[in-house]
Length: 181
Image 1 (spheres, rainbow, N blue to C red):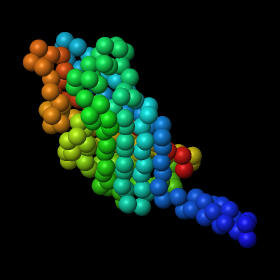
Image 2: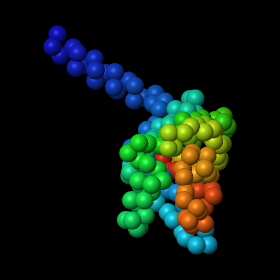
Image 3: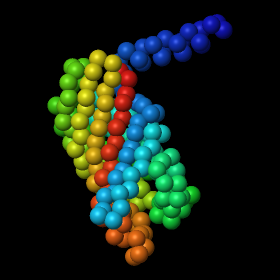
Image 4: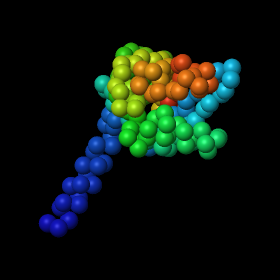
């Protein structure tokens, strides 16, 4: 009897891995860029958690704000303290779906176009958002890539008047999630 419970747990794990409906990663990458004639700002995080349900097209992405790395340490400090207030708002999330799911062939290698809609929460504000992306399917993995356009003002991110020309009105956000099959 003492072997029955571990055996049942092992069998449950083996059986659930055969019909793997949900793909996950803990090593996704999010990069954002702000380009103006005055200044180019970019940062990235490789501490991104993401998942996709292959049947429903549901996507979830989570990143800790303080995990974004800048080339300039002072810029990183200002980003966390003054703009993102990462002590008060420690994470950003995206919950959405692939709208053209019927075109995705997760069992056939290739590159598929995706239309994504959902809700992005940054700085404690949730906004509906849409974007385009691709799903590159190989025999071993699925690489989801998407680009979103984000306006800091939509998320109550205050930029002082003195620095408004240094930061783009629309920030380009790239998301890459590589998930093993």
